[in-house]
Every structure is written in C-alpha cells, then in structure tokens.
Length: 201
Image (cartoon, rainbow, N blue to C red; front, side, top):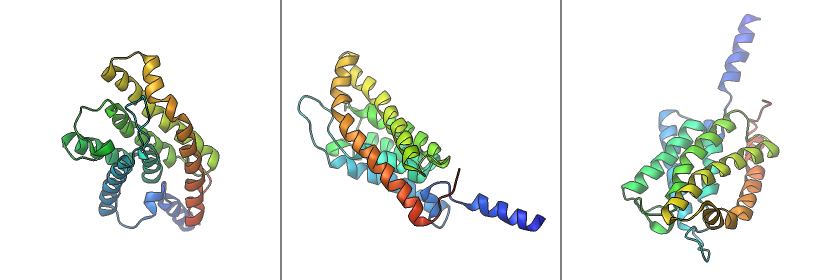
C-alpha cells in the first residue's frame, strides 16, 4: 500500500505544470524554450500595423508574450522576455519595425513583457490556462500588467498627461486585446485536452 501510494505521489509530481513541460529534456529544453520565446516575440514585433495619431502600432507581440507565459511557466517565460529586452537594448533589431536601443517611447511595454510573462506563467502553473474562464482571467491580468508599464513610460517619453497617454497607448488597442484574450482562451485549454495531460486543480 505504501509503495503504491509513493508511486502515485511520484506520478503526480511528474505531471506537467505548463505545456512546455511536456517536451523531453531538461536544461537543453529550457534553454531552447527561452530562446524561442524571445525569437517569437521579436518576429511578432515585425508584423506591425501603424495607427494614425499614435506612435504605438498594432503588433502580435502581446499575444506572443501571453502565450509564452502560459506555455513556459514563470521562470522560462520571464527569462525569454528578459532576453528579448536585453538583446534589443544591446542592438539586436527586433523591437517593433526593426528598432533597437532605448529611444522608443514604446519601450515601457517591452519592460512590461517581462513582468507579464512571469505573472501569466505563475498563474498557468496553478491551472490558470486549463479552462476558458481561467484563461480569460489569466490573460486579462497579463494584459493589464503590460499597460501598467507601457502607458506611464509613454507618458514620460512624450511628455503628455495620463489621459493623453491612455488615448495613445491603450484605448485604440482594447478591442484587439479582447480578441487575443478570447483566442488564447480557445487555444490553451484545447492544447491541454489534445495532450491528454490536463488535470483538475
């Protein structure tokens, strides 16, 4: 009985906390996932649609950040976004429209990516991406964090008031963000079901 109980406990501990844990390997896997998160975010930044009247374009970056957080978990997602931020500041041209360095007024959003990915990753590790409702809540938290970092930075960079910064850097994107959240709420729980690894939390 004790042996069976121990085996069951070991099996429970081996259950994946996030989708990235389903991949084999350990150190090499984690390094590859961190690099992939940074590269995916960089690629998403190059698909940018400018909007009139604002320096903030529509990109796929925020969706990449949310997915990376949920799929990779706290540590790997945060490291992936930190790599993206640090490499971009160092000169890798993978910020929006091939930009790099610290001169962009949208850098605050990129700083927010690190925190958002970490928080989304932690919530996902606690089951925050297993059902559509939980996923919506998790993605909304991550999105709010990105705005909480990006809008004040935009305000300071452009020397405008908070209301103007919100008009420039948040309001035009809310509808698109809602679609991204709903898309994630469909994709992530479905991925868990396909892997057969979902479990009650």
